[in-house]
Length: 510
Image (cartoon, rainbow, N blue to C red; front, side, top):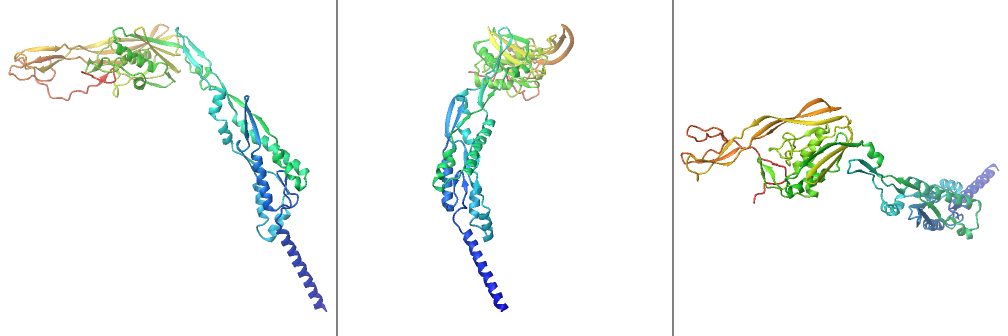
């Protein structure tokens, strides 16, 4: 009897278990979403999963095509949310829908049982799309470009400032924060309203988010962009007044030489040196040659003036050198010409030989330094503007410490009578010159400093000779001769390398 009861009990339990298992299996095998499921205002409950996802895709596509209006300083741009870089998504919802059909029976039961009924869309914002609409070029066409402040010098050497012009630009930081925030708040508001007012299935599309979302309008925030150079910035450079002026004459210069001096002067005019900057004349000449070009004019080669291109450029370096020294600046590199120049005292010139000799000085004034250089009325003038104490001034004093007699240079000329000679080129004296810089405070000399000791080599007297034996004379230099009157031979030496000064190319003999 007991066995029959037990069997009956086991049979009932088995039947119940089977029924329960079958019920669970039926529960999780449903193809529809749980009732009451709302996404983006859509009632998707009891819909087949594929149908629900298809409706959701259509809703997201419709949302992406909703219009948004941007007003930028009166200019109106209308575009879709997709064009503005906004993407609507529902990936968490899609993932949960996938889980309804994945995993063990119990996992699927829990998923369906715990399935959320109210889902919000996700918003992502790619600002690059919006920035591709409002490009810098577009902003420039609407607002213009900033204009830098300008420092001008009056004919009376007074410093004046012309203010720059600021312009408007889009404040991207604020705009990129406002757009997703305002859109997100509107979407959340509409979604939450739909949760409280579910509608029958046949009417769900009329309350979809895409139907309710209004056309949002944004007044694009703007900011003021100052020019890179402002009056305040220029004034902070400390260029307060003209501190020195120096001029040299061009009265005896030909047309080509005047052009070359003007080209070199224009290449340095307007240069501003910050404290500690080093001025490089070689860079200025390179710029002048490319920008203005040089013409034919005498250059220095082998200690003599010969035809070439660029003759006269050293008058600019020499004039600038005199201004820099008289401003108390530190000279980094400078060398005198191989010949004295007519426009300056000996010891106060600064030559230039491309690739060999440069002129450089350092701005040691403690403030910015402005160089102005002009050629007017056949006169080159260099002015330096900056700031040094007004009671301090500098001057130069040069003195010749030694005169170098010209040596004789003999060349053979068999057409001359035997034992005779002929002076072909008169030599020129050379000089050794010391130059001092005098510093004065309130007109009284307080310092006298040797700044250069220059040698201007003597130029030889060239003499043609025909020796008593009918042969040629030695090609060496000599001031002595033997008892026969024939010059003594000099040991064979490699001649010194000759460089081109005061020009860029030459000699140009035709």
